[in-house]
Length: 132
Length: 318
Image (cartoon, rainbow over all chains, first blue to last red; front, side, top):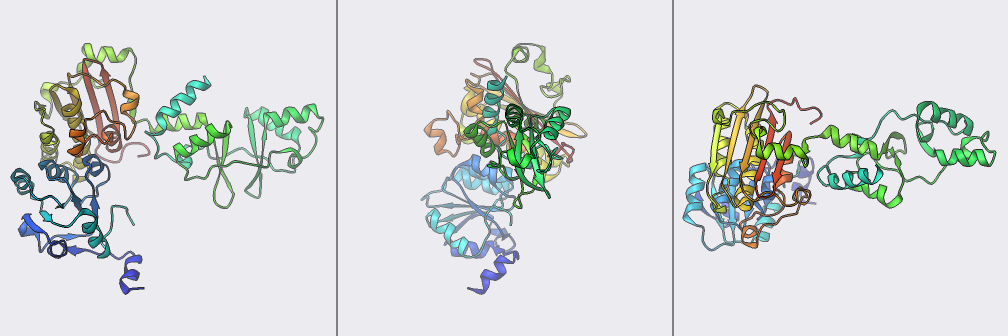
């Protein structure tokens, strides 16, 4: 059993700096560059249904999504999601990036498929949306 | 009466699926010990006007005596026998954490009228009848479903200027926040809710409350854009104890409110689903995040959603 496992199961808080997350997701930072070194992420969720996000998101979490519309950013702002990572899509519309800047939400663009992006963060011991 | 109760519970069970047995059950159950006689059981049931009696030994549930058992005992002249000889021992029980759909499933499968609730040490902690479930739902009552004449009054008449929840008069021109949903582009949906959130935070409303209001309003706003085929309005009123939000449209109305309230049901098109909406979560999300909610709809005349959010945890039991 790796050492990490035990610290994880003891419920200690594991956070990861956004800058490190952007590196392991091989992501381009589209907005929120200034928060990269300060923002620490503890929880992650992934969804393409905005209503699921509205229903289950935890404040402060990082959202992985395949949607690239400005709506994603607006939804993030409403539920208090701290960071949005758009995966897989080739292009992110300019209006989405503008919305992210307006709401002050870091927006990352990762070339990884959603499953992989989730897997990478999961194996780094970031929590999901359930409380424990 | 019974089929109505069943139908009501059936319609409501998905909306209230977070309710669990321990919230619904009647605690402090009247019970009897197995070495008493059937005669004593009969007297206890008669005095307490109950139709089933759990049999308990050292806190552990060991059986159940029903009216039927009493009648049989009378017919067979075994009424003076001790209970343990006659009681039903094969019990189907409910655990305190089973949720409403699971409980309802047991009612339907067995046809029984009541279930003892026992914890994992087989201790009797409560009893659960369909009436308890209905009462639990009513106590939980956050969502009032108006399908009667009041609906007509609301859509057509003066009630349009009254709160659907409290009945008091509301002046929409004097709303603390107003936003006109005058677009049909689904990609714009949420603008009103985002502005409302900013407004609330500007007024010093706690982030957590502002978030709940914004999420529920977002869903209502999105429904106007996706489903109404018309424009709509968001009004928000601030009161010392709560925030009230009213979202109105003049569109085509909800065809089947029963279905619309079911989680996962949606009439949204594929195009809308591609945008991440139409998951059939709208009304359940509004319900999840508001403390009180009323929806009124008339086909061809629109939908009014009114929601109330308590500023402190003043809502009973929530």
